[in-house]
Length: 203
Image (cartoon, rainbow, N blue to C red):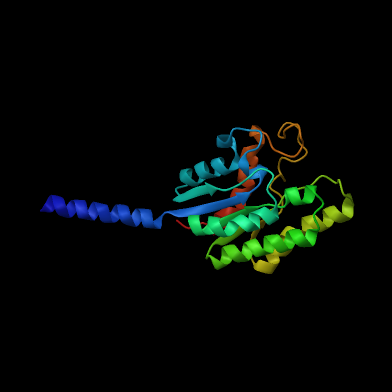
């Protein structure tokens, strides 16, 4: 009888543990998908390891796709939110839009809609931006970079203006294309995300 009771108690604790498991959804592009490197060396996987090392019980779910745009991200976000039910959603998109000279208003509108979808699903949001090369002139670049802090203020969410702030322009940390970080730069990118993510976490 005691054995059966212990089994029931153990099963209850296991059930509660699973029920309390929380997810962090990452919806991004090649920067988060690990383009040009082994994905296990990418910042998303490094963040998963960091969370576990710090004693946080979160599961990282990476739904990033190389080449993705804010339009595609917006289209696929509802399904991802429904499947993952994340406590936190990290949105890292906009770079490919910028490289295609997409009007900044359209980028902002798409990201704004994604933020609203995540918040309506009771998910906290961390918006992650990117630096662009000055291909389309200073005016476009200035407007693009303003998107992220403006959305942060509008929606009252956490924002990392540029995930490559610590690696951009350093040839030792970047791949040959000058856009994607190499393996050595990934830990620095992870630390940048971690600084903004940590206040959103709960034990």
